[in-house]
Image 1 (cartoon, rainbow, N blue to C red):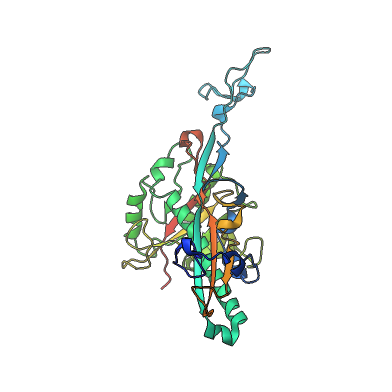
Image 2 (image 1 turned 45 degrees about the horizontal axis):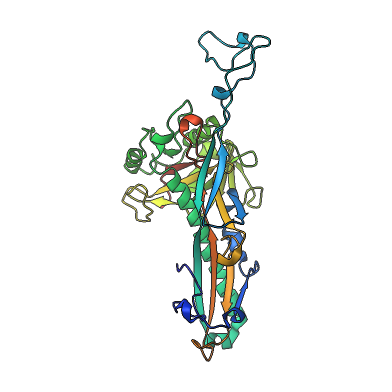
Length: 385
């Protein structure tokens, strides 16, 4: 997409130096929730991230997050009767009047999120305007809103997939396993590339989602003390994966099938502490790990389901809307007045632009300090044909 939808007298691509002096009077720029209501209707991932506006200079926002709770840092007084002779020395009991020396330290991690500009552009001819300008504008705005929503979800989805890309080995330390990338029908080896290859070689029936596979992901999140969203983890699930879930008796006999307008938008099934939300914009791979593809290599496509905990990713945007603001409410610009580049007003230009960032909250802290993604990705195949 172009990075600036209006660069000159209402015609994309003209030199900024040639912008007429009356440019500011010819531009209609506004935020119109009615024309862009399709955005809110189509967004799935965005509602589960931390979206904040900032008044700042620069195109990078830094988020901070402290380490998780850990006994290794506890210095509170405790009874020795509760400790075995082989237990760790912390917590420690102290004699009366003796100050503790095992000081608590709270490591603070950070993640930098780069803001980038996104945009969409359309041109409407004067002949079309003469027929029905307002109705045409409405149609274009709604469809461009759908485009923006799909783009917004894709940006977030890609950021989450890239966040744990080839990272099993990075987080596979400690007593919680650390496998935040999981593969149906495959025992984690700690190397995602190898596990993906094993999954790719399995049949569809052996590589589809199962309740046991789902429990593995849920247990990973719980063991890693990942906080929940409204008391549940949320799984953004492709329809092809739900296709197999609905045919599995271990799901249908135990799962709770919910109304789509319930607490979680488009909620399909509630089971094992997970709200499965149907979303038709999944990350799909063919034969190559980490490469989006819709080409079936012969053994079935591989779908990713994203299990989210609280504050799994951030969506910062600038409060100053000059560059576009959040993509959930992009700036809509309409140029519909004549100028020296369009002297008889033959074209109306309609466009939107946004300026935001998306990135998972995975800080620079080491796994030894309790750093963990607040989400996990499950890859599986589907028997849907």
